[in-house]
Length: 348
Image (cartoon, rainbow, N blue to C red; front, top):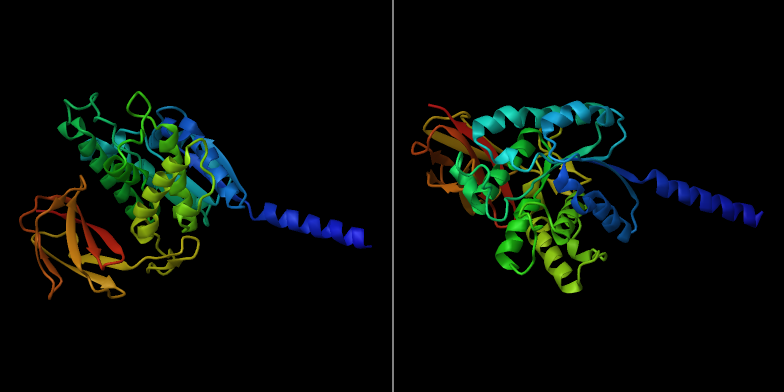
């Protein structure tokens, strides 16, 4: 009898572990399959004693538009807990009109499909990075792409825009790479083509996803892959400083029933409601933050991610935007601990 009970306990425990295994779907291209990013994420989870299953759909050079045709059947299986979306590496940095026509609507279609067939799944856009020395293939036609900074700032703004407009999260891998370039220039993030990720570059991406989805400090990750301890420490510290220390900045998840801000237990994030009115605006806007927070700084960014000069009155929560051209902008407030961001447009 004792042996039978022991066997039943082992069976039940084993079944419980299997039942709790999360399923990840990675939709992307070569930036996803280089160094087998899904496997790196899996190994990090396993090192923390958690079992996950990964599926990768990442043909080279694929765009969201192509995935809307080829990946829908997999999405329709309705068995995924996390879905990661990565656009073709250059497309989100192209001129606004081109991006809005060739990328933005297909990001929306993919999110709608995931929400329809996987209603409990959590979506994260995989923010990629600027090429090491800019996109020289498209530099002549669009000068902002001639430098790393120009291309990277465009990618940042567009991925944040897609995440906010689709009420998802964004895994800010590109932002972490920017931090590493600034603070640890000895770490080589790129392959020799100055585009695709090196092994440590992909390891950083995997740490980003782990910290975002679990709300855990990446410094506690015990698996370093093939990276030496010193480099792994710097990589995880960068993820901590950019992702873990500002988790609320990277998620725009909204309760689809009440349309109010909600606490997402799976992320450990409470998303405050920052609103701007009128929106679209012409010459002045006012902002409202609920629940109230003591705002220390206020910044307005254009669609390239660069701060722009505006006049504002803290006493009235009013901002004079009359000096800005028509277009899309981001308002960011900081209360000393958290950053709150929303999008608004100016139409004249």
